Length: 372
Ligand SMILES: [Zn+2]
Ligand SMILES: [Zn+2]
Image (cartoon, rainbow, N blue to C red; front, side, top):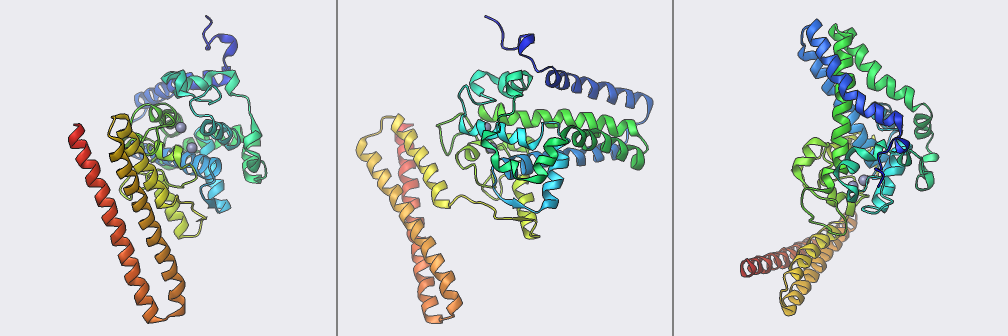
């Protein structure tokens, strides 16, 4: 059987670019170190370019343009389009089109980076193939209406060359006395690192980690992958709730892309941040735990008891949120007596929610001891 990586199937530009950039990065860095002296300032400048381009992919290409999880000021969009191009991962238009197909057809033959075809294919192999270089714009019509996106698509190669290679070279030469050092570290080394860290999202994030929200696809959550991917390691959550601007939903989960979007919203440069209702998140988590128990052949009565407790948790949480909503409305009317009553009802609803949730947790704990 002929390999899918046969010559006639290869996109030569992509293949050569991905194979040559690591070699050029090593050769240039070696030449720079053997002809000039190492400077920490060059490394720091390269790190800044790495962050600029990396976060433009996650915060811009991914969460802003591909998923529309928030709206951004044109200045922010321009920043993401210019520095995102410098990551050499194609224009937003092409990138977002592929990515939307990935979500819609995950784990099937139509998924451009289908993990079922193997780790290598999902990581980098798919970029080598001609069939994946074809632009299929049917699911990115909204992007066609965005003048900035189409400007970046039209001049992609020039913008990418400028922000990805020329600008780091100029900064290295003008501010830190070495054009070569700037080109080596801020240009090529940065590009290779961003490539593979982004590719990890398509490969490792579909292989290693946990499935707290859904097991209907291969996406996994892992805190350690979040460290290399500007917070995209919480991929199980992301595949289930793709319109949420966050990937790591808890405050302590490492998601610098989420923190950047939050910071931009404080200065009104990002608006309409989409957040999944907490009931939906809780329901998905509880469903997964009960689903796991069903596989262990637990008695039907016990499962029913857990499911009714789950309903109770969700109903109490909904009641609490309703009270919160009423409180906000009544606050404007400034009737102290009514406000105090609502506050008490709100506290009661919260306590009932916490009680039902604790009951469910203890039941699950009891069960894990029995089945251990
Ligand atoms: Zn996505
Ligand atoms: Zn994915």
